[in-house]
Length: 336
Ligand code: TXA
Ligand code: MG
Image (cartoon, rainbow, N blue to C red; front, side, top):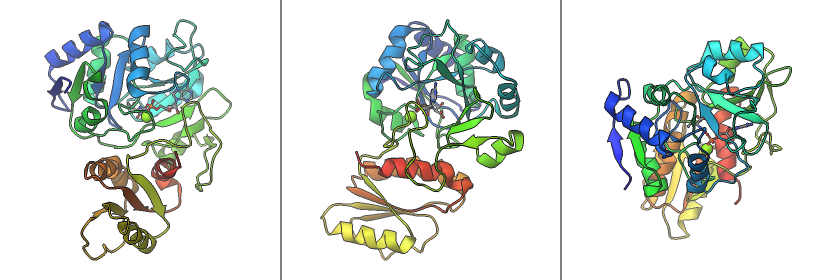
């Protein structure tokens, strides 16, 4: 077990934050809560620490990390060019679940950007994350604190069960509010371009940037890889994940899988639960997209922990409001 410190998510103890910042300064790895998911943090300027992040996650070196900062001033210093649209988006959504992709400043190590010439940067809203970045006085490079292609963690327990002793410290700030990763927007081009749908919804984004463009296929068709580090397969539970078009289909599929002899998970959002059945574990999630997202990963983590062999999920409704969840379902269910 790594060291875990439980913190008040609104008013984290200063001594714990100071200790965590000192560990980062010394090249250590600290897992911490954000409003989206837990991150595995390293000091962005420490090549050794950043190298350890890739090692611990089992992540290819070509997949860039997100730099966590206090706000626009710190972000500007990491980019070689700061377009006006970046200021507009940062003013509207920072601190919050929006990641901006910009041109990398020459002094920023290409190690954090997967060898490329762009960087991804965001100012998280969670008080623990904010306090940690402020106490370090430097950007914190942090991917989601899970193994490569695995489920993102929304509690400290999820982090510990996936990464174990590999970290120096875990800051436990309770369950994450959004439960799904930040929205990644490339602001280098003429129009802002969504590379990864996420916790910041399209309607909010469009209200501030009406010219925002998307390249990921909202309809759920197979998309080309729009950004480095966006694998076709990603966000996968240990169990096989299957998506069924309707609640009834999901039910039928789950019953058929029970004949394999193992346990099966079934995740609905608006269907009537089926008759109780031994070995069938049923979870009904809220039919609201934001509330669904909040408990989505936790539900999959829970079913994995219950030892199910397969998880059948009722497909979520079409439309932009469900885009982020639909994207995770599609990638989670993609064949290995
Ligand atoms: O909510 C979040 O974004 C969480 C918390 C911890 O902040 N972080 C997170 O990081 O999800 P990670 O590394 O698991 O996913 C970051 C994704 C990459 O997979 C990639 O798609 C995109 O952000 N990304 C990062 N740097 C990029 C870059 N330079 N250019 C394009 N996309 C980039
Ligand atoms: Mg991730």
